[in-house]
Image (cartoon, rainbow, N blue to C red; front, side):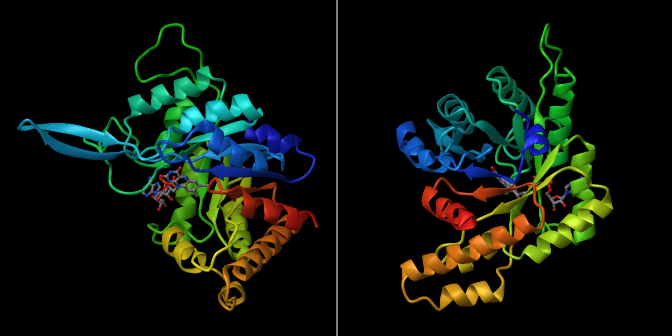
Length: 315
Ligand code: FAD
């Protein structure tokens, strides 16, 4: 089912989860054992992150040879396997950086072949990782990728494909309640978010945030900018003291002072876990009271913290 239909038909707020593919060498059963605990909460969909290759030029027998390495297992293979095992709607993340438009088209056609209907279109971070991927043959911004997917939805491929079906993807994009770190200001960032929606994005999942007021302001401003697609808040369960420093640094988010104080005064990891989860539960309850269509949990493939937050919301 398309995520937009799910939002329309859901009788109450839904939950969804995001997982990160395991590092190479892990067996599917190991990942599925962790996912089993999350599936018990009946997520409406599961998104799976995607990561650019590490690309290098190495000398072999005096000749320069291109080398590409992937640290993590394949996003699309995980989506296809999870769909078969759990009957869940998988939402693979598709990134521009490090991929040509031809590679993106191939991946999307494989997903279409497997009946996957939802994708999250993202730019990715870091410099283009390969020769040829910073060119006219690659997508620069997420809005360019949305355009490519929408062309495929009209049956327009990079080169004509005889007797090819049109694809029919429901497309999600990223939104930033505290502004994307590269954007000069919120107004510019929202204008760029609107470009993604105008290019054909159907829903938005936000970057993680801890200050709901920032989210409510963003949601109101997005509406004023003419963005009328569902906005799903992305929530990261906070459960370690280290999160107080790591999450703001990596994800350009601010943690409210009250949360910092309640977690940092704990003198052992169990108490810090409890204080963090309590703050995530309170954050989610407040979002639900403010009419969000659902909550997307950044589980990072670790079941317990997300499960504990979900149990807390129900209690
Ligand atoms: P864009 O929408 O392209 O925006 C990037 C920046 O460029 C913004 O500052 C924007 O304001 C600006 N901009 C956009 N269009 C234009 C334009 N036409 N002209 C000038 N400026 C413009 N990263 C991964 O590598 N893998 C993942 O799986 C992944 N999953 C994510 C999931 C979610 C829900 C979120 C919120 C982020 C995720 N990311 C992932 C991180 C994401 O790739 C980074 O945040 C990245 O820096 C921006 O991606 P974007 O799709 O928002 O880019």
